[in-house]
Image (cartoon, rainbow, N blue to C red; front, side):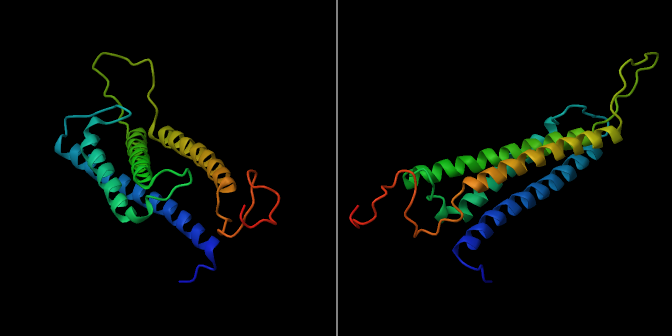
Length: 189
């Protein structure tokens, strides 16, 4: 496959990584949903009404660790590169830690949105009238969609900002910048 040059090749890598994260998050969400549905069938009498279902931790924690380990192994040769000038060993550690944090946030997000979309209505106790009406399924879906849309808009703005300050256009041959001397006549410096 042809990339069309150095800069488009870098962009393919970045956009491929973002698409990969979305695919991994989607697969993780599907696995999480199947797991909790299985637990609901197994534990028919146990219903949770929390925003983070504690029963999901046994699948989320190993999933986050497995995804982080998989990506560290797959990306090991490139983990030593960075824009801060960190030594290779430190860069690998920092990048691996960043991946762990990123996958952890994704895992907690999957748990939160699943619980928000699948919250069960509490059963009324005989002889007791409830004064506060719980959110209906339609309202929960609308709320989840609204939160997701707001996050998408915020992340879109953040990604556009990062893209604009990124080094995608740098091909390694340009010699310019705020700390570079204006006199280029002396090749030694």
